[in-house]
Image 1 (cartoon, one colour):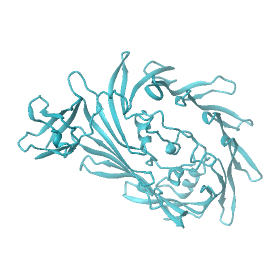
Image 2: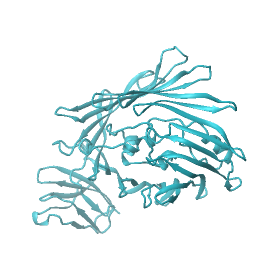
Image 3: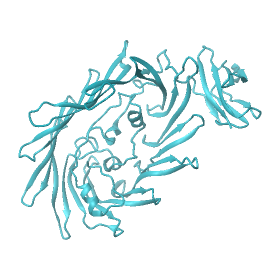
Length: 508
């Protein structure tokens, strides 16, 4: 793909060979999700996930979301649903922060059982112009309990006015704790839409500790699907344009995240290589666009006397939604295809199928290799809101039900803030507890008016109880607990309407 890893520890020639592979447009890549948005009115604020076991759906976990006024995800809290023997308890959480321009700048995930620990953090700071300068992944060092930088990429921009005129991409070498040069883009030009139209690309040679002279010159770039950002285009294993991606990849609970495939990839360009004295033709791509939609992209190689076609990607659309992407090659003298991706949507525009097919030879029937299909049920009185969403998996070569069968993976039940129902096992009031774990005193914020509370240990022994008087509304509850034994406690809260909430507390 056009997005290539900056291979640390390889020579400039090897890096150049990697980057010279065709700049294919890849649906459903990370960059494609960067335009994903969920309207606040259509987004659930809590979800119950169930697994199918012996023909019955059983709760596995539930999670609740908090969004800001712009509809962006700011918090997620994961819960184990209640059982007949035990109340629900929170076992994880995530927090996201954004820049003033709305870019995701930090995503932290916490494990909250038996103690609260930050397990990993994605840091994506932006500069004063709103451009992401790095994507760094920190993970917990189990030996020290602190976060350490494990992977990352960074971009050093040079501006002419407010326009990026050059940049240096670096990768983090965690073995040596160093940032290592990867590639450099200079002489960047843009069109009126602020999309790059050309640049020179150089690779860092770690053997000579200098920029390799065999640069590549790109010109005539077009971005008919749209240009996202330099970070999204060049690619990063860590970079995540928004917090919805984390949910989509990790929990698949938001089918309404809009997918705009092909965004952030050029569909036309000419690439020439420097041979020591001049730039000579090497590769090019050209596209066919109809109604603003890319129909076909062909990739060619210069053979000295002319251009020879290698492969092409053919796209099929229904309206503005991509329904098929087929890869074809011309190695036999004519265009032939043996692999394709398929997508299907329902009348509401929600994705119902994401699958891949292959065939052994031209004219042979297409065989489904793998895929997911989604059975969506909407609220009876509101077709814009999904009520349940069943995820089914297919694997041609195996699966729980045997080869070539659709297997139900999970069912998701979505809940919304204006609905009377509440996600089973999701927290009610957004209580704030600090510190937790605690030693001498614990402070509880957010108790609703006339709420009754009690704290017990795991054996049900009562340690403290009380109620929140109307005149105490908005004040914090402070409880002295120096004499309590170390261990796990349960805070139970019942509000004036009879709704119950549980929290796990830990005494050091």
